[in-house]
Length: 342
Image (cartoon, rainbow, N blue to C red; front, side):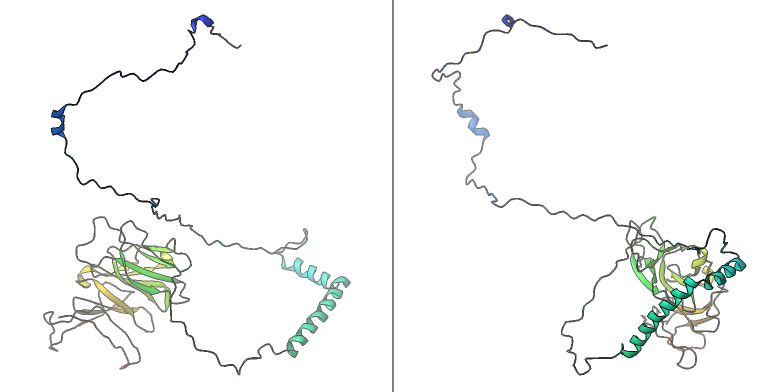
């Protein structure tokens, strides 16, 4: 049902039509000058104004949203068999193969393909595909200056950006790298700062391949050259942590704080031993400690960098070790080098 209400109004209620006529100007109001108001104003002299003829423009920068990629695998199962043949049954498949091999159509197809393959093989033997045609041409030297190109950028995914203080490449194919993130300035770390470090895939810079969760920020990190799944990291509190990437992000074992370095652990490196589990570390506390990652309760050996060469070295005249190198062919065991300060 539709409800309609019509409003009506007579023409005589609209009023008369407006008529306009020309008439001279008429002064309605005349405001006289008040000299006392002049004291409230200051004359601006000289009066300058600058204008810009060119149009005004603004510049804006926008970061596009990153596209995260994922790697997925697909398993292909064996197919192409008749419905009454089970591919998992070896006897059925063997019986069916023998039946097909005796078929005349199969024999004719093999003979035709054999002639084509024989022709192709003879053609390859007639043509030397490794022949070099331009041996007598001397290559011009490269006139372009050496340059580098940025392929990928691996940024700290946390809100408060930290420095990448050390990296270690994956031993097998260099498709991954482990990066230690930390702030080395004393007492400059903000409260609640993330202590994680990351393992990156060089083909996927948008998202870390794995997260390492130490109890203190990592200052150095090193892969085991004999076992690419194992790596060790030196922490800011002086402890040495050991990870197995197959067992998660938490460290498998951490050295005891009482038997570790008293300063940040700046460098750790693996020894080329038979077991592949021995490493040694250095720090600005003036010590070099040898470790076995199978038993990290205490170091296996300790060396104090004392330049006085006393029988009982003390920590009073030591060098501060921040770098350490290893060469297994010198003096039968090792060689170390230290950047130091007194």
